[in-house]
Image 1 (cartoon, rainbow, N blue to C red):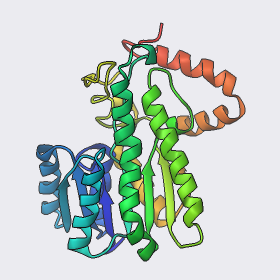
Image 2 (image 1 turned 30 degrees about the horizontal axis):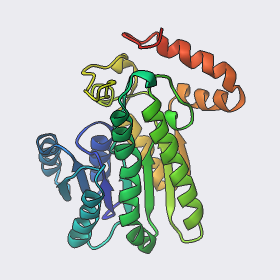
Image 3 (image 1 turned 90 degrees about the vertical axis):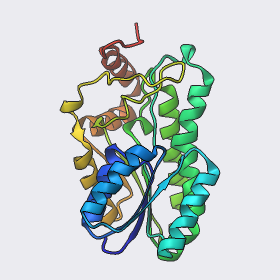
Image 4 (image 1 turned 120 degrees about the vertical axis):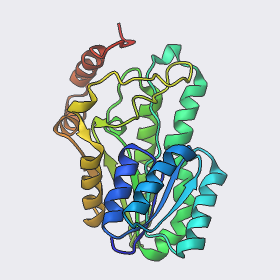
Amino acid sequence: MKDKVVIITGASSGIGKALAFNLGHLGAKLVITGRKQDTLALVEKELHNKNVEFLSIVADSSLEEDNRRIISETIQKFKKIDILINNAGISMRALFEDTNLDVIKKVMDINFYGTVYATKFALPYILESKGSIVGISSINGYRGTPARTGYTASKFAMNGFLEALRTEVMTRGVHILVACPGFTESNIRKYALDQDGNAQGESPREETKMMTSEEVATHIVKAIQKRKRDLILTRQGKLAVFLNKWFPKMMDKMVYNLMKKEPNSPLK
């Protein structure tokens, strides 16, 4: 990873932040993005203290022009792009029948279209460097969960988009990785949208019992180095993907019962 130019969207917290520190430690030159200047500034300070070379850009992944600007500023500073990590994401938690359609659109705009925009503008440079495009997806990209219809749809869409793109560029030296963490200790559930588009404010799960963002980042970096096609994390995640492929009807009941047990679950 020494001197590789790596763009990480949504790098102000969670998996994105952990990836920045991991890759910075390995000598990569980073471009980190986030929507909030204050939280991004905290990451900037830590990277400065670790003598990591980086460019920080305040940008909204859901906006086409912001993504165009990210790529433009990266090329202006570093002259190339080796790795694009599409990490920016948001979740939601509410029954579809109760959910404002603007919530679904917002989740799709950030999770799916954010990936499409960044990849579109970075692709010419990735083709030139024969580099990597990474999508930080989810087990929800393989198995839908109730009360997370918009999030599930965005991750299915991301997986399909990157699979199709991988096939398009497979003879041109470009590596595409779809990384699907299981439940990970991060802020994503704290900021998950409710039916009206407000952050739910607290996680409905026990965060301390999950894989940490740092552990997830370590697995992802190793998968990039090995140019792996897919990465599915946690024993529970791997089991869910396997069972859903071979026993989907049974999984419907299992997933319903599991999600029903969450605190304040909208499921009856």
